[in-house]
Image 1 (cartoon, rainbow, N blue to C red):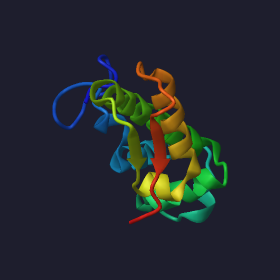
Image 2: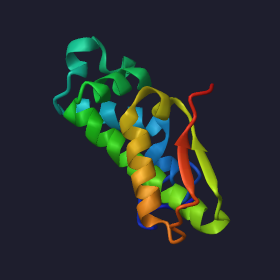
Image 3: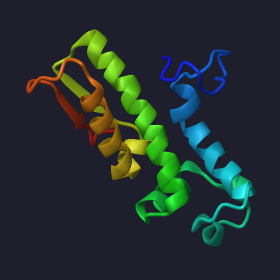
Length: 136
């Protein structure tokens, strides 16, 4: 799904796909790339080798309000929210249940996705619920 027509090159060959902004791989790559460009982060105190940073490390840093990880995760959630609003407009569901590592490990991701999706959706209705599933 395209979320930015002039956006990043995606692995599929297109530009601006949600995958190019919101995947765990891209979030991790963005954090590692920023650290290699000497951005500051609490991850530098927690990890010996920058390339060994895992998504869980980033999520813990987000929860500890690390500005770099927080900004990158918030941007990824923003694009996910745009994609979700597109689906809401097309499918007009009554209920949306969100789940996955980003939702389970950080509150930020769920909060931003829900806010963006609801604010951008053209079908705003009190009947539409966006919930977080605590299941596996």
